[in-house]
Image (cartoon, rainbow, N blue to C red; front, top):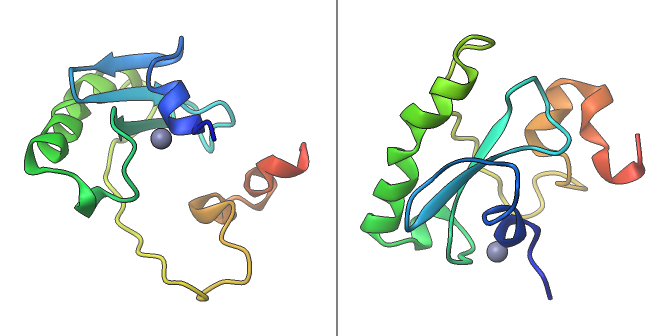
Length: 107
Ligand SMILES: [Zn+2]
């Protein structure tokens, strides 16, 4: 099955990249400049990555911030999710702006 994150990591929306990671703009941005940084290898979570892969992702932060600093204030969020903590986890952090959360519903 194709993974949307893996597809975007080599797609036209990439704004920063290195051999182990890529940063790309979100197709349905929560705010202007919203960018995701992902490892180039398909892994389930950040802690499953090698320290080199984690460092490669973090190394892209300054470059990504360079793309968005004129429009926003860069920061890192770590919001843990737990199985069963919400009925439907889709949308995640997007629920802080309810009109942006249901991207799969064809807003
Ligand atoms: Zn993937």
